[in-house]
Image (cartoon, rainbow, N blue to C red):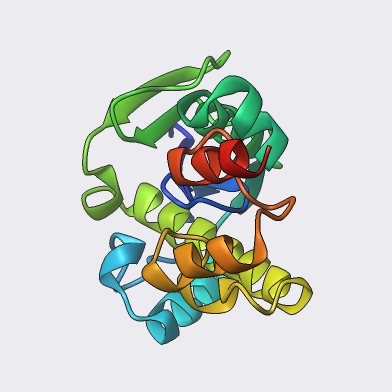
Length: 190
């Protein structure tokens, strides 16, 4: 039987925080009901499914690309780097990686990009859920260090509250200086 890993990333759009990917190899003997694109699930349902995935999957792993990496190589390449790291962090080596989207990271194993795969392929759905829950926890943790920004609520996305906080409090080390709204603010101040 071919060992298949599903891979998905979260956090390409936010103005702050890392981009994070997950890779999951499911256990065919322990199917998990309700897997789908993490964006289509409530926070509570994501948490429940993440717990089940961690218990029942053959293995799962996370890969992260930091804010300095995002600013250095751009968000697309940082996303691909996070995906590659997630796959390399798995305790089992898959024969095939199914990647959500239209690009695959540079891997030594076979890979296939599937647009909309996070709502079509159980392994990718599971990776989507694991990645989303993990990144949300990271941003909630950062909320404690930067309480004026509301990272616990908007997770670093460019909401009106976040943009107002940027104007009022300035750029933090969590902000992606290569992203237009942050870059513009840096140029104003710099």
